[in-house]
Image: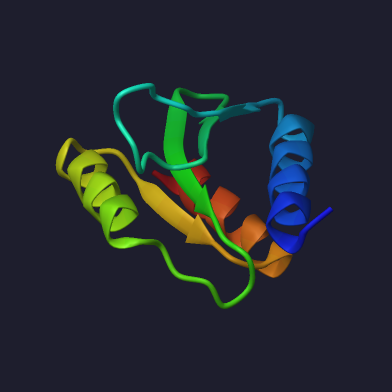
Length: 94
């Protein structure tokens, strides 16, 4: 299992422990969308792009993230398991 997959799995487990879902997001015909939609109790929703440590989103991914943010949705990039708790705390705080 590569590092990005390990981070993605850890995110899914962490979200499930909180009573939520980390749904794999694919959109045929719309490339560059974030990897996961995180749904938490209390109507909390965010999009999460997962990357291997030190890797950055591609230009098309950045464009899609900006589009989602302009619609009012929080979007996060995670490239390390140590970031998961902080991101989930931020989603809960919104």
